[in-house]
Length: 103
Image: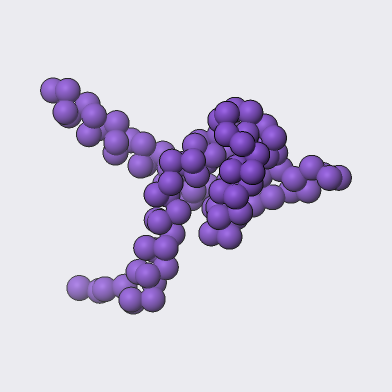
């Protein structure tokens, strides 16, 4: 049996912690549909621009989102396909649990 290094598992733990905040998850959900600026995300979620910026900083420092700067406007997007897949698998897992609870 091959076990992963403690360092790798600590990194994985830190990675999954970023998914532990509903505002960050809502932002990721918005970004599943394409890149957006802070103002657009704020309007869609009805959350202050300050709160969105703060959470985007966390998501960016964890490499879950990346940016493109166009003039003064910064657009945010999911950093890669892995983030989308992890998010979707998590949703599928929760939806299965809800479905099983109803049966």
